[in-house]
Image 1 (cartoon, one colour):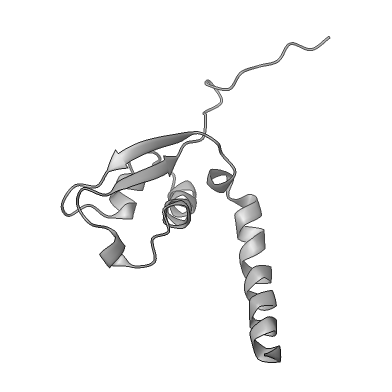
Image 2: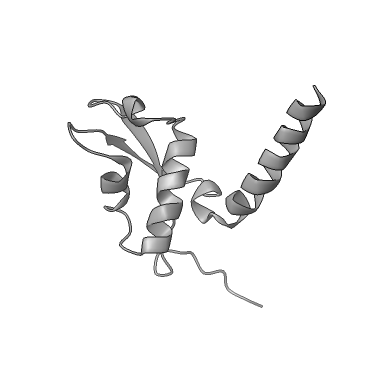
Amino acid sequence: MKNVIIAIIIGLAVLSPFNLTNSYLRTSDFDTVVVQHGESIETIASRYTSDSEQLQELTVAIKEINDIRNDRDMRAGRRLQIPVIASDSQKVQVASR
């Protein structure tokens, strides 16, 4: 039992910093995509960003949000929620006083 608790604490410590810096996991805006035959998470994510660091973060976020654990979870016809981050030009600016 003690080993299980230690493993959980270590797991949370390792994963928490990544989730705090992954802005895709903090967004409230989503697109819905229907997986086509032969598509992967990476090919879907690449439609939303060409930046390699953001692509990695988006891939992790898609897996987590849609509870994808392995390749069998990616079947044609499945609907995926894709987190979307507003670009600087899309962000609403608040007037200062």
